[in-house]
Length: 142
Image 1: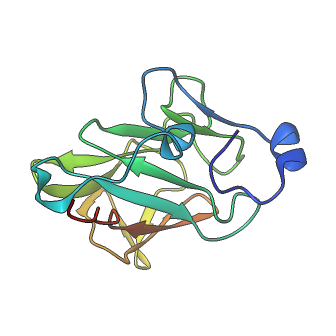
Image 2 (image 1 turned 180 degrees about the horizontal axis):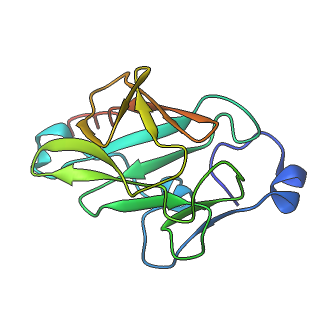
């Protein structure tokens, strides 16, 4: 089951695929949020428009490719995405996004870019999808 999707019936018609071994939407429900002070980077990305609205997935230490091709770690059935549209991940403690030579490009807060740093609340547009960058929730101290 895909985490945080409103209608399971629609998911069967328009699937989201996460490559085995890649951190994707399916992993969100299984893994607890990262602690900010744990030393390991972590963030979440949430789709804010269209069919996939509300879908979230974690971005951890490994970089993820977003696209419509089966080789992407986060594959969406979205015709405005290139097969390998963008890469999102961490470079040390800094979250970034990089265009992988896509036809439609990537936009961060309305500005087209090839590679840029991302922060909490930034809006990312890839193809027709709009995504919001969210920081991971902090775990309570035990």
